Each structure stands twice: as structure tokens, then as C-alpha cells.
Image 1 (tube, rainbow, N blue to C red):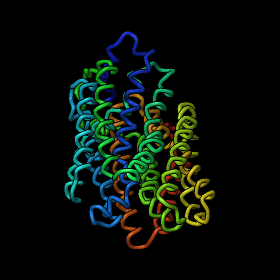
Image 2 (cartoon, rainbow, N blue to C red; image 1 turned 135 degrees about the horizontal axis):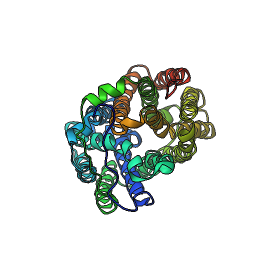
Image 3 (cartoon, rainbow, N blue to C red; image 1 turned 120 degrees about the vertical axis):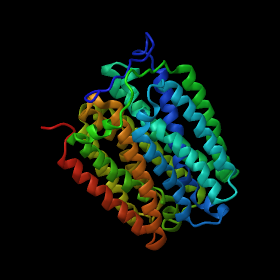
Image 4 (cartoon, rainbow, N blue to C red; image 1 turned 135 degrees about the vertical axis):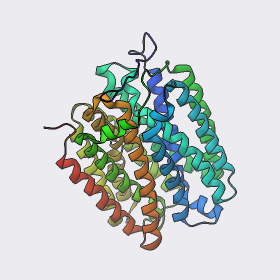
Length: 395
């Protein structure tokens, strides 16, 4: 169909009242984001082990993001009429394999192979996740279900990256990726046991992307998503070198700082998530303003651990609301194109991660730590201006 998708309701008599499937999807988003972002907390030991620069190691994020971005928009069309439950389970198994390959990588090329597998899995999972909440719960609960699903993104910062950093400090950076491989297997099992059947009655069409892009609310939301995610990952991918060199912090303190950042992200997700259900524009503007402020202030507030923590709290709380607020904006702009627009959003999100980590690597290798944060702040500020000028629906 050209004007609307035909997604069958979840094949379960109690689907509207059951939250186990929503929690299973949240666990999967947690695992996917933890795997994608893990090099952020392990940048220095990975670089030393593989005998490459921080900028080159940061390309592991770029590679994964680019693969995910290329796959996500076309995931519904590529999958066709296959039940979404089986697809999700299969690609969480692929994610586990990608992390295992990364864990045994003796050099950067093998690491790249593992990250490519991860990118393929990530692209399909993210291509489907944005459209799941409306299929698992009823209308009044969709905002909360979306908040819970995207809480996996914030909680990944709390438990994923910081715990991976601690595990690397205790054992080795490879141990963090072995843990992620095991967690991928757990996710596949939980999804298989809890998700209802998720059939599709109409084959996905590639022209659904063009139809979505013709709607101004969607294009504005995608532009904002691009700028804020691009800016965030330009700076956040290289936050460890900044905290080491500019703030003079050790590994344990950096892990604690990332934990505080993540906790603030969870708080931001559960604060801005419900707000985005009622006022998506207000939620998005609040998130972007906080990210811009924090990234802009960090270069001049590295004099003490206290000021660093305060900035990271603002940064974490603000960015914690970015995923749910931008996705809610997209869904509000085109409620009849949930899967197509959600897949497109996921592709833009992952492309922005890739380009942000790439841009940050180029800047930090050639202009230094302060320049990378200034570049990040200017990019997110541009996104804020777009959000202030646009609305998810025509006035």
C-alpha cells in the first residue's frame, strides 16, 4: 500500500496488557547499543593492543554505524513477509557472533570483520525496533512502551560501557566483548520465549522511504536527529582521551564518570520520554539545548572532578531523551508509516553515529581535544535551531 502499512497486531490475546515482550526488546536495545558503543570506554587499551591511533580505533564505531545505516532503512523491504519475531532472534545471534569475532581479533582488519557483522545485525534490529511498541501495547500505553524500549539506549551507558570499562581494567578489553557475545545469546533466548508472533500482511516497499521523505514533519525530524547525533558522537566517542589528557583523570575515575553520565541518561530518558508523548517538540528542544550546553562547557570546566561530573550529568540527562523524543517526533509526523519511517530514522541515526565518530577522529588527530568538543557543540546547536523552527505536524 502506498499510504499506509499493513502490520498485523501481535498474535497474542493478552498482548496489550503484557510488558514482558517490551522488556525483552528493551534488553535487546541495551545489548545492541552496548556493543556498538563499547569502543568509547575502551579506546585507549584497544588502540595500544592493536598498535593503531585513537582516531583509527574510533573507526570501529564508524564502520558499524555505516553498515547499520545502510541496512536499517531497507530492513522492512529486505525482510519481506517474514515474521518479525524470528528475524529479531536470528539477528541477535548474529550480533553475538560479531562480538565474539571482535573479542579474538589479533589485528585491526579482523576487528573490522567483527564490527561489520555487528553492523548487519544492528541495522536489521534498529530497522524494526521503532515500530514495535505500537504492536505490543494499546494506544494509551504506546508512549510508556516506547520510553521503556529506548531506555535500553540510556541504560547501555549506565551498565554497558562503564561495566565494560571496569571489566577491561580488571581483565582485558577483550573480556568486555566476550561478555557482549554472551549477552547476545541471552537476548535471543529471551526474545524467542517472550515475543508474540509479529506477522506482516503487506510486503515492505522501497518506495515507502520516498513517501515518508515527502512529509515535512518527517524530514524536519530526520534533520534534527542527524545534527544532534552527529554532534554528540563527534564529542562523546573521544570523551575518554579528553578526560585523560585535559582533566587528568585515571581509568577508575573515568569509568565512574561514565557511570554517572549513564545514570543521568536513564533519568533523562524517563523524564523526556513521557513528555515527548504529550509534547514531542518541547521534549526535543529540551534535549538538544542540554546537549549543546554541556558539550560547549566541558572544554573549559575540566579543572576539577566536580565540574566534570556536573557537565556529564547535564550531557547524559539531555542525550538520554534524544532517542525517544526524536523517534516520537517521527511517529507523530506520520502515524500511518510507523515501520517505514522508523526504519528510515534508524538509518539516519546510525549514519550520524558513523559520521560523528569519523569526524571526531579527524578533528582530534589534527586539531586536538578542545577542537573536537567545539565542533560537537556547534553541530548540536544547528540541530537545536532546526527543532525551534519546525514542528512534527503542519500548523
